[in-house]
Image (cartoon, rainbow, N blue to C red; front, side, top):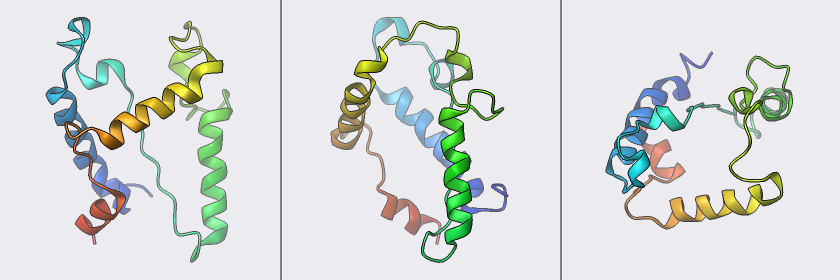
Length: 123
């Protein structure tokens, strides 16, 4: 149950932090008044410890995988994109996502806390 888990407790904090980051970013003029939720659907997912709960971990990994691969699943992450022409062709998606992630990791403007820092906040 995500509501009783650390993820459930952190979800609101993470969403608020992401909204603040979004508001502080320099955006192209056409997105200057857009809210984060206008362009992104935030979704959170947690995994238990592989070391201590291997069976549950493996079940959750399968569930997470289905969110990316099973278009019939009610939790499929790309439902909204099914009928749209992609802005990034599938052949260039990996490079595009790597570029985004590199920007996130190196941008002082984003000031994203590390996993270690997030974990320490909720211990």
